[in-house]
Length: 105
Image 1 (cartoon, rainbow, N blue to C red):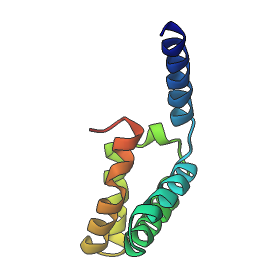
Image 2 (image 1 turned 60 degrees about the vertical axis):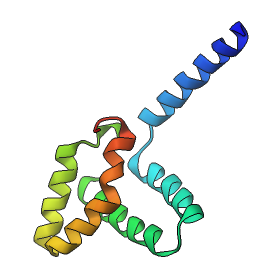
Image 3 (image 1 turned 90 degrees about the vertical axis):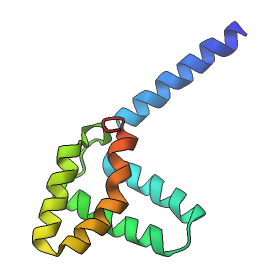
Image 4 (image 1 turned 180 degrees about the vertical axis):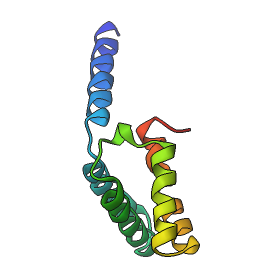
């Protein structure tokens, strides 16, 4: 039992370190592969477009640096460039990023 707890703790630490060192583009690739395995073709296609735009605007920042303010800035810029409708679609596709980074929610 003690050996299991020790190895579990090490595994958890390694998982946390990996999460905090993951760049947004790498995380996006992993998410899109996962999303493609559980959804029809349309949601992953929308997510791919939104994530590409998010990375274009914010840069390939580490996942832990994604904040609510950064997402709001992205959506404001998308509203200026395209429309409120496009910004809303991008919000739906990218809102989980901040939650996944552990910084929001």
